[in-house]
Length: 210
Image (cartoon, rainbow, N blue to C red):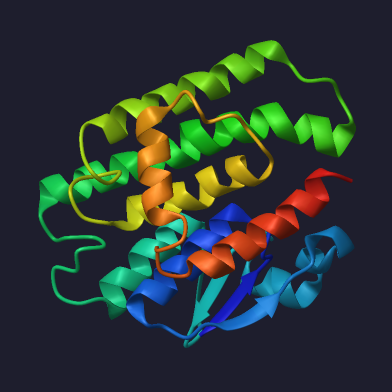
């Protein structure tokens, strides 16, 4: 199972943690976006959208991290796997958290930070307010249950952990979010693949400081 990735990418790290939780060995293929490797013809044949992470499982190629995470559990997980249970209501909540991470939490972080370290633009206070709002929503969610989508660890936790650990390593102040801190301190060293996730965060920090 070939996995095209970059360690500093939070979406890539969320897939790595999912594979670790399922006991799946990924054949990791480093794809250096900074060198334009994702635009080479051989990769475009696999993924014309030229994004990472990309997974190729016995000739079947797919991308988008959360779709890959769900695919791995549905194909290789246990029946009614706690990472993504078969109960429609439980799945709906997990899906909501996954889409929240993609469309609100991570997006607000990227919108705020990427112009600063990619284009050397000054921080935009309005974009920071949106990021803070996303953190406040997450804090509310985590005040309602032990984990991101209930009382057991699910795919939602792995996706959001990849995001929040990135916020941590670039020294975003999370001190006022009591429930995020409780959850993060519980998982940051104990989640499947936590060490590799943090190593990728440290790579991200190097890039952030350039």
